[in-house]
Length: 424
Image (tube, rainbow, N blue to C red; front, side, top):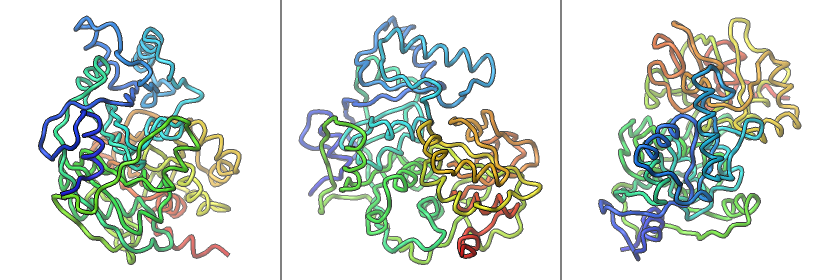
């Protein structure tokens, strides 16, 4: 019996020929990503144990992103703490404000994600990087501290669910709609502590950025990780960003899966996740008359340049509805600059939207766009739990960048296909 890509990567990182689901292993970690929120407790834990030095500072990448630009004294102190720590530890890969970004967009953009590697971060959406054929997962601050101290971390080898996706995306349908449909089908605990491996003709057709969106939200189905076997698109993307070597792993044809799920997306329409779960999804045609106070475009899920292009195509020469506001947050500094160069930011601002500096901000209910009681937001982010973006009495609806843009124009949840079809 063969092995899955996840099993192969973990085996290679614990010095074994093979591993099986359920086994406990200690794996070497190639990239340790640290952001402002979960790293500060890890720093304190290391100090309490008298561990004054990070084992492998060259493996550590640090970027403040959740509360930048700093919203108050507490967040300023938090970021100042990791800034001092990175300097004391001689960590060269520190992304200061002005060349920063949302961590799961910045890490691959800057060439820190390579196929066949292991990556951890104190953030659940670290599953994003499996789109490049890496084993990448979120951990708590305690495990983050342990990895910083040793360069290794224990895992229970996860079982893998294989999702075979066939068909081609229709007009106005994107990878965000695909992953929302998958979560609708299996539920928020349908892949609990399992790897979600995505394959099929749909995946082959998708760009690397679109694949990141799918792997990003594996955690919303309870997944330990999301992963896609690397192909030429992956290799080209990585080689354009780093000269470091990497090893390609792929699942064997006779690999054993705990479940295989076949999905034909040929007839899929834009999907909207209703409050208060990412699995509470409906086709946009069944959304009804849901007025929105805010439309939010950004985040580690859908704040990349492709996402901004999709939204700008819909919003060009149109206006945000009178009683709706729109916030656009390019995920990294480089994306912001590229969007500005292409005139996308002008399109958004001419439509009446406001454009922010890169930040996680409102996605986690932090700042720069949080909701008041009774307000509704259509968002390209990944979670819509109670109070996720502000007041526990607010409502968050999830959709693709196209659905967010169309809804901003309509002032209510709207079908983006209508606006794409209107194009001359």
